[in-house]
Amino acid sequence: DTGVSQDPRHKITKRGQNVTFRCDPISEHNRLYWYRQTLGQGPEFLTYFQNEAQLEKSRLLSDRFSAERPKGSFSTLEIQRTEQGDSAMYLCASSLANQMNTEAFFGQGTRLTVV
Amino acid sequence: GDSVTQMEGPVTLSEEAFLTINCTYTATGYPSLFWYVQYPGEGLQLLLKATKADDKGSNKGFEATYRKETTSFHLEKGSVQVSDSAVYFCALVGANSKLTFGKGITLSVRP
Image (cartoon, each protein chain N blue to C red):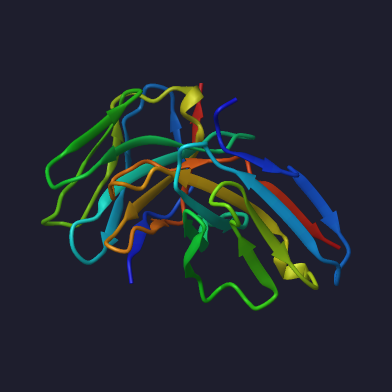
């Protein structure tokens, strides 16, 4: 399978716990994005990487959120001290960003439920 | 900053009806424009794209034309099918190379 894969697909956690999600992009893609999507809304940008460099981080992302892409390949998104408002679908996408018009390919997402 | 505005939904149509979903954008420079689709239980997929003014993107019977003068990228299909039922998102990539989405609109097609 050469698509974007995310793990886990579903995560239920208790409030206050830490969670970590993983994204494996398409292998030759140098750009990787994280988005959050809640019911009835479009994907909201969280952050993105060009290779291992984190180029932009949304103001939506509190200091409880951190993302890494240590070797410019897979990425992790960690949420510390989860809150009920963090419940959402977390989407990862990748693209070959040598041109502005390049298509981004999305993974199936990780659905987080904080109870 | 960049933004995308889509018409309010949901939209319910009968099979073979004509579809228009409106999308307008605000961006500096010359963004690339996209329509993504999310079928029930599936991830986001690119439906079509246009990279410069007056370009027309097309796929699966859907079309959208990049109109710089009206900053619009409306999605159209001449005859919808039940299988087109999904959520449709308009999006752009601007000068900052970030993909920005509209809120999406749910389309339901009745047999």
